[in-house]
Length: 359
Image (cartoon, rainbow, N blue to C red; front, top):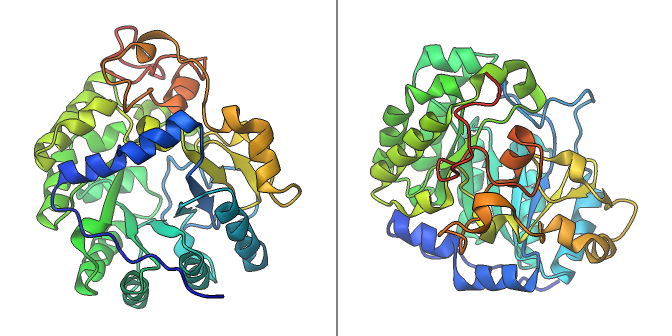
């Protein structure tokens, strides 16, 4: 097979450039065409982070690793239906025994790979990630860190020691030469971390981050047992505005409490480690079938509108001034409301939103 590996895009110069790329005309055209262009691909459910709010490790099942022999043919299928980008998820994809080989193969067939980790990276893994980046086979590393405060970290994680390990891992990536703008910090916004978010944002920006993903806590999975960690509407607004200030870019506020928005979620498919195909990793119950049992193109052809959230949106999200880039978080609508198509109940721009739903 001849290599058609794509070289890395130039590193963004600022946070605004990241937003412009995220909501580009090409992505908006894919939304208009009702066409998937990217996949959240769960390699394994195994993870060592021990998040007490996790959705992925919360099911009553054994740890799952998708076999390499199944992954590689699926990637060929995805290219055939026009997929351009793969977001490797877990669990922690670095715990899959063949993660390096899988990413290399994806690059060889022309897919862009973004790897989202739990933030526990060895020195050897950091060097391997950098090598894959140099080869044009890896384009971004997502890195999960919620707080710099040890006491807060100990509250929301099972193992307090992982905080120091995460901080050391971030520095290992930078020491290996990974471009700062290609590291995507990710935080899960729970109520305990609200009080420490400013220090965390400043820490990321000081290390060259151009964007910080905020994943809003949802009362699902392990989160059901800690529903008191739901951040209030005012706290969500405060943290999002604080991030805009830290990044010197208020454009992300146009997507309210979700960093993904219309251009992402309406072009995305999700494949779980056991082969289920659905629209979003945060809503596994919406799966339409299994890619081990039926070709992806058939499943997408039969369930396209469901998979790409191609349906009318109700309430404020249908008429918001930011409808060009946002349609509210469907996960928020399902987990905090009662209607997948309803207005985002955690968005401060929604006049019908309440301060809290679980407390």
